[in-house]
Length: 401
Image 1 (spheres, rainbow, N blue to C red):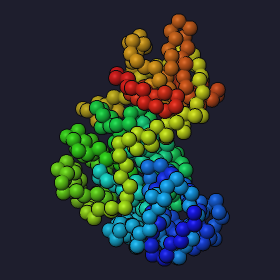
Image 2 (cartoon, one colour; image 1 turned 30 degrees about the vertical axis):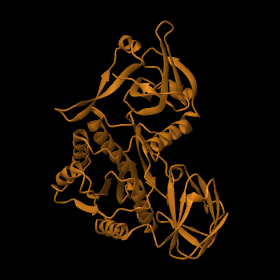
Image 3 (cartoon, one colour; image 1 turned 60 degrees about the vertical axis):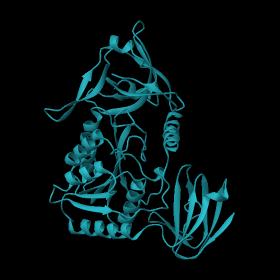
């Protein structure tokens, strides 16, 4: 169908849909689409369980393919509210004032489904200003850059709307979609590691944008977020504030102890953001798993010289540790299909895999991975996660170590 949109109106499109700009100019999360670009560049895929706002900078005409007319709505005005615009301008000013100093770190915090959207919006506007940004995705369950159960960082070297437009340059494997137990502390230290590695390779970066998960509403959630903020130490914190959430107030109080940290509180609810329910989040996770796993195949590698380990945390020394697992103990547990990481001797990530079989008699390990032949000789450790999956990405249970 052909849809016309007046200037200064928003076309709200829910997925699954495909939209192609035919005439005019629109903006999505700060990324511009105009007829000066090719048809391919002007085509936007809106995935299931997502909603994209196309704000008309000029009167525009678009071709839309979707499975229901209910997926399309015209809104008068811009669904990006004035609070976001003010914060964007403040962030850009802060970057310019900080020029020549250590790159800033910005974190978005809250329960709201708008966190990732806000990070995209900031990233696009920072890029538009000719400034350099890194994007750190610390949400284990809803990864934008790569696979759920991992943490990832990449450079924003072009405008972004979807995950296809940003590449994960560094990855840390956690092995869970939820920051349970010691992962509450491991995630923060892993994010610091990712930021430091990224900045060592990108000396001209002005700011690192940190997307976070929405786990807040428990005592453990408060401990997790407080530890994350204290450890990663963001210079700018943007909070989707909600007076009714006591745990969020506790986290805000802790975050405000730093006198050098600038905190912005977003209090205006945006009714146009698509709030995913639990089932939709599960579907998106499974889709992400399936997309990566479709390139995997069964591989056998020699067992000799390989250690099985799990990640730990030493509270006294405040550091992440590796704990070796006795292979005989492991064989008594439901380890089959557990998501794992293949590491070098010095614990550098080689590839992700699903662990199928440990054959002690014939001394080999059967994996499901995209590990190539050259990389096989470098595998010295297998870091076990806790999530068990089918080869199609379906949840199969957990491995409790």
